[in-house]
Structures are given as C-alpha cells and as structure tokens.
Image (tube, rainbow, N blue to C red; front, side, top):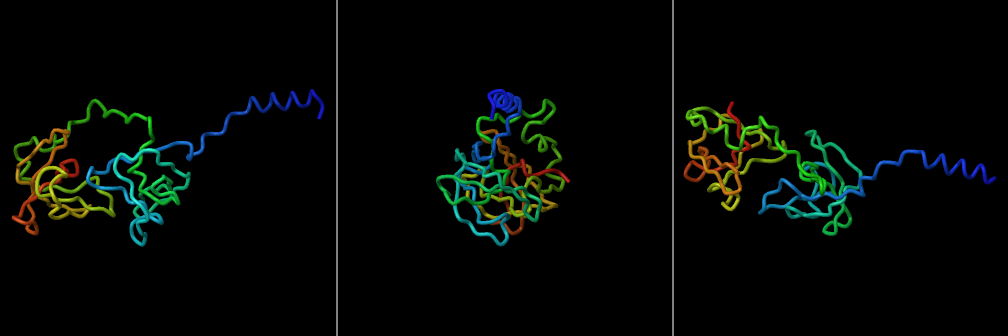
Length: 200
C-alpha cells in the first residue's frame, strides 16, 4: 500500500462515526426492590417455568447487561445480566434495573404528591383497584404500615373492588400506606402501599 493510500485510509477511518457503546460497557443497579426483599435472577425469561439461580439485594451496583433481552409472555422486558454474585449470568425483569450515574427524571410539575388519591373524605366509601403490579406478581398486604410489618395476605395484580377503612399513614420515607378490608385477613384488615391503589 502506498503512503498516499495509507493516509487516505486513515483519514477515512477518522471520519467514520464511532459505534455505539455495547450494553456490556454500561452498569446498572437494582432498584424498586423493598429493603427486606431481593431481586431473583432466573435461568430463563419470565417467572412461569423458570427457576431462581441467584439473588441480588436491593441497591446492588455493578450489574452488567449482556445486551441480550426478551419479552415474557405478559409483555414484560427482561435482560440477561452478569454480576459477581451470579457469574454465569441469568435473567431479570428490566424494571428492577437502572443505569448507574443516570439521574432519575424528576416528576412533572403537575404530578400529584404520594397519597393524593386518599385526600377525598369519601375515599373510604369508594371501591379501589390494584395498579402498577406486574401480571406475575402480587400486592402484599401487611400487618401494619410499612415493609417492616409481616405479610398477612396479598391481592392479585388485577384485584378490584378493594375497600379501604379510611386509615392512612405517611411514613418518614414519604410512602403513603392505606388500611384495607378483606375477609380473608386476620382481623379482616391489613395495610398496603398506597401507590398501588387507584379509585375505580
């Protein structure tokens, strides 16, 4: 190759756009997992038919996405990841991962604060429904407001006609919990995180 041809080739290469970073060069952390819970890593996409091959505690950093992804039968997006706790890799629901060093977008100015849906004095007279719970998950009902209380029952992700008692508790974290009625619960009552309830 002549010197002129070599210079031309180098100049041409320098003008080409760089390829986007591979997914494996970006790390993630575990989010949206309660402090007393873990993120299950599974051997395949989805919950039905898969088995747990590892766990990641809430807040775990340095999770690497391999670039592989897929959709579960319910439409949820899953990523194949690797981490020192799961060196062989496995699959997790992508909604529990957030890119590190990327600030979460602030809520829009018009967004109402947590618990706004309970401010109406007739809230306890209306039926409520579960929202924001994956189709392969449940909404835990606890013995008191907050995840420090034991689980006493659960609502399916599509539960409707839920009745609240009118007792609302705002925790120091800002989370708003509502007491609900259910005949299957001990004492007929329990508590759920209010962000998973909307009026019907």
